[in-house]
Length: 551
Image 1: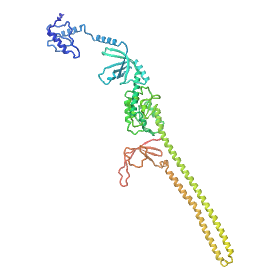
Image 2 (image 1 turned 135 degrees about the vertical axis):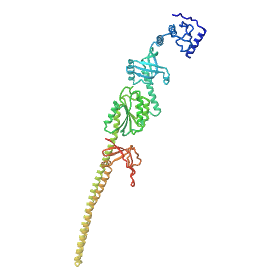
Image 3 (image 1 turned 180 degrees about the vertical axis):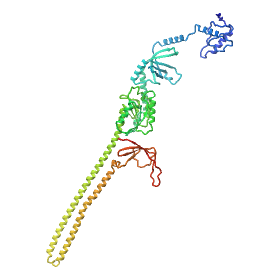
Image 4 (image 1 turned 45 degrees about the horizontal axis):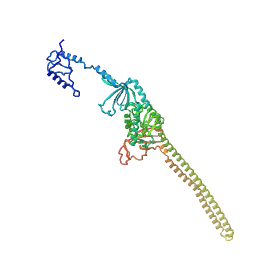
């Protein structure tokens, strides 16, 4: 083994060493002079080589043996630490600085729950949450602790999500394998989290009130016949099935447009907002938002500001049936109507439609009853009039008969008196007088017979005329009977607003129509318009009808 070289070096070597250190030293660190010590070299005239010297730094040749001995010499230096020794010191420093559990407040930047039940969080200062370079604390919550935290959150109706500011207690440690600060969560302050959630809900309600959105839905016109329903729900769930069961039990032909969406989870608010937006502008009577029962954490999506604003600003009335008894979200508060369960919501939609249908039935029954009463009243009046006419005719006949009999008796008395008085004067004219009297009597009897015949036929003609008038009135009343007209084959066509159409003027292709017959109603869509013209037929397009059932 060669002898160690002297520790004394020339001025040029020292200057060269200082220059190399200044060149390779980072700008943010102070310059450190090399620690004097023995150096191995095969040639005293050859400069020594450190392990940090870049290749080609020295012009002279450097042997591998010289480089190896230099590295061994650096490893034996008394002030050099191994990585393990360094991390041991750092670990002791961390334990000394944080001998027990500490409370830390931070905003959740990311969150991941493993299949084994462990939860890993990245926390940042809330004021620097938007800064990608902000200091980040990696916190981990073992499966046993995370289960208890989840139970506490579910009991309070909370769900830990990205963006929430949390206050956690845990142990600070140093993870040697990665050389990073480690934080093991022991406890999560649910009361502080609950207070922040309640404060956020109160802030949202105040904002909606200030913007005149809190009761905007309730100012919309309530649907009188909600047969066209836009359903925002998750198909196949209990809430979806309960609502549809309430509609199907009514027996009415509801037209339900289903917009599938997630109703719980991190992405649920955005999906619910998108589903409500898709239904805007469609020909719907009401939008229904339903979700079955669950924990308060499962229903947290309906307390989100985006969902509440989507419900409040909808141009179509929104009815909600979320959760079960005792649950009320912000979406329920701003909705047109809110129900405690999807079942009750479906039953109410069916009840409103049935009430409208029963109102139509009642109005038809009243109209039929009034028509029958009018016909019966007309029949009674006609019968009374006939009896009055017959009685008047009999009285007139009896009066004229009495008058004629009286006149006849008077004539006979007068004639008899004149004959007796002037018998002597009329002997010569007896024959002529008798003949004249006979002729006068015959003529008078003929006149009486003629009048009797005319008076006898008058009541029959009057009764016949009155009978014809009564029949005309009966037919006229029957013509006004709404149901009778439908039974004769007529139909009534209405537009979307329910107004009766009497002309094609104002219609355009794509217009939705409803035609009512005696036994049901069909819906139709205008695909073309045929305008009647005595000179030319401009178009021969038909309409595409789609039959819809009615009660």
